[in-house]
Length: 397
Ligand SMILES: Cc1cc2nc3c(=O)[nH]c(=O)nc-3n(C[C@H](O)[C@H](O)[C@H](O)COP(=O)(O)OP(=O)(O)OC[C@H]3O[C@@H](n4cnc5c(N)ncnc54)[C@H](O)[C@@H]3O)c2cc1C
Image (tube, rainbow, N blue to C red; front, side, top):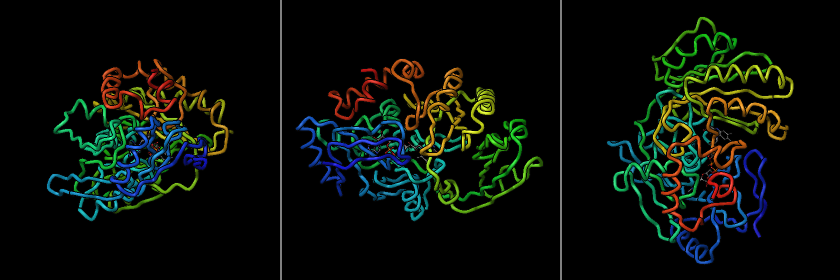
């Protein structure tokens, strides 16, 4: 009997039928064959950082934490094959040995690259795609128990646009081929100012910097502006803000931050143009009703549009706004009070964070939803890689 499994924040707990942690692809292939013969359901877990019930199962939970290789690194074309057990941090450090780098990371680097890619995890930067945009190939154990290699070149963009954000519902990825960048350095500067200065200058802050985001602190109504650029580029001075922190180095060392404090989070992706108005409305609600109970901050980021069928950035340049509440504190009343504002602005929920949308409320947000379901169904006709949450609440099957 497996032990109780908990996600990073502790807000999800369940006992899988079995937790399997194979040490190689061969071992996994053998085990998967037996699982599939016995009609068990499978969910694959990355680092367990999602707080939506993507991996909750009473079937078999598979962790690939031992698959940590970096193979066939190609400096000329800036590509490499990564084992799906690598965290963003481990992958980023190993890639530096090959003079290669991810183009961006999220706010932290402790997720697995595979988990981050599967949910459309992103950092910030209006000209930068989410992490899923790196995926151009993968090795996968499929629902027929066979290991297959897929590449965008061979299998086509349409298939890959569905695969790039697919919530672990296509199969068990053992390796991913990623489109990378030559290793590069960044300078990070963090500035403190009043929210009104930030909003008055937001277009320039977004346009003139490689990575820009801001944290709003509800209790003080101050913001922290976080700006990253290649050395010597971007905005160097802000007349309306005080520089409180500086750091420079390889992108993988400078992009993510360390996080000790655990939290739960709701995040929606909005049409870029709607970002400032949506933020103002959220700020008003929090100041009116939650200023004393919300212990944490609100994060505002940008991401470039993509074509991936169920990516929250599908077809539109995007602003994301995230609400945070410390782990263990009540969060649902706060999140539920703000969620209608996100929905009013046609927001799409982050697949790995808290939200309450179901069925048509979700599918109506994605013009390529049915195409995604068709491709997914071909990959997994009997629903081996679905759990009850995905089947009923998300895919409405
Ligand atoms: C502290 C913290 C900071 C965060 N910061 C950001 C951020 O800056 N930006 C952002 O967008 N999100 C952020 N998130 C959300 C997080 O990036 C996503 O929830 C991400 O999916 C978590 O990755 P994971 O490795 O923990 O995957 P899990 O949560 O374990 O799994 C996520 C999905 O990936 C699938 N999966 C994982 N590995 C495989 C595989 N080998 N084969 C097939 N499917 C697989 C799973 O089945 C599941 O559907 C943050 C979360 C936390 C807790």
